[in-house]
Image (tube, rainbow, N blue to C red; front, side, top):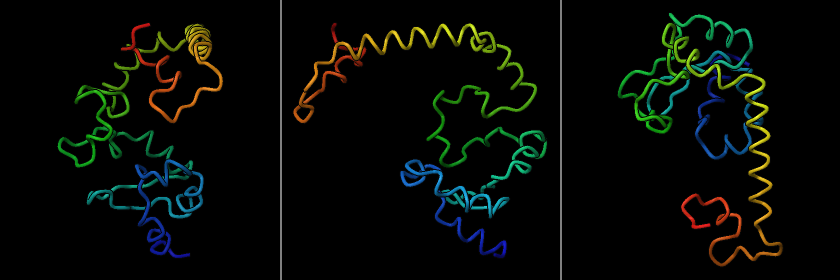
Length: 153
């Protein structure tokens, strides 16, 4: 298959679409075959890299492949969960290293084990509050009520 034919296979590729989110594996062969390729997302030219060697090159060369998103880039509001504050995913060195140093202590093996234990305990507690045989068609389910931080409990 020619490079242009491979790239045309990606014309419908939208990483934000329910179709992709529901079954990303179905896209892997097309992404691998076409990588590297350019697509347009919301009118913005975007690069797609899916093969290990390409991804490694991009991840290691922040000068040519910056993670910093240009201000005013359409569609970024979809992934701006921190209201424009610096985020590791969208930063390059040295900012990236500075942000990693701040959070690294939260991700030690011991800390992750404690988080996993407390998360499992919370899940068991919440699931224990759910009545079996609950009909969820009419209004809130017991699970929704158990997970609602605003509900009086």
